[in-house]
Length: 214
Image (tube, rainbow, N blue to C red; front, side, top):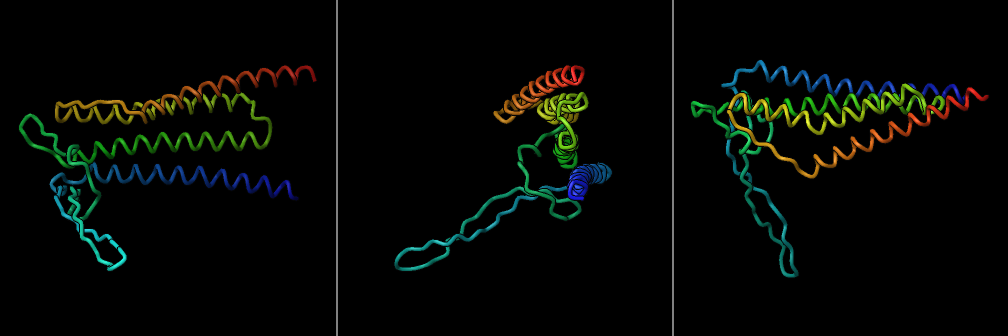
């Protein structure tokens, strides 16, 4: 009975993790499509000054010191969406016009692709854990899943940025590419995951040899 309850719990956690990944991907896709069909004239960027209060204390008195923070904010149909980097919303086309909607879609596409890739990696990772808990982790299906995660990780490192660059160049004839330390770390993770897949593949061969002897 205890073993059955353990299996049921593992199955529930697996299905819950997969469901959460699917829901996250669904809502990101839904928001992207909603923004895609929105009239570009509904987008605007506002320059706002926000005042913040910070407490300064000493032995003699307590006082509030006001500080101002200058922000650029994106609005859609008069509704606040998010704070933005104005440099990413200052691109102009050949006619000298900018397009705030398109700039927002560039960021949305980057976020959507990243989310879909992460969701796929989560699902594969959960399936690996589930199968490993039921029997030996050294199975061909797990090897294929780890290889797939390695490829997805590589895509996660390069694909979102590549799509953003292509979209920017297509609309504004402008290209701004660069590689930071985060991109380098993601490539390393992809390489390490590929090595883990090779280790698992070797484990599968050893498992098959052991089963044939038995």
